Length: 90
Picture 1 (spheres, rainbow, N blue to C red):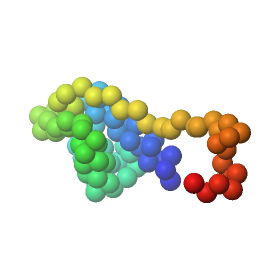
Picture 2: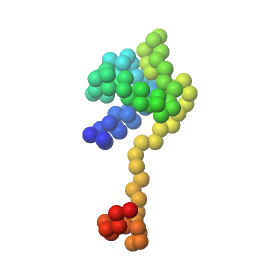
Picture 3: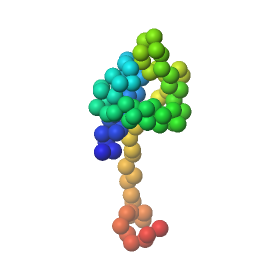
């Protein structure tokens, strides 16, 4: 589930960046989600600081200011003194 949402957000970002989202309904279809989910994703990206606008003439979402998003995680390599499962519970 989490990886599916991550993939959808990455796809959404690329479509917005390229100015080729289409209408909200078309975008929902492309992402395989509902219109409501598209609106939530757009809202979430805006909360993260993305300036996203919609152009009615071109029928697409676009960034009014360039942004970079980084999706993912970095695993932490534990050493012997700070390893998980050592019973420390801290």
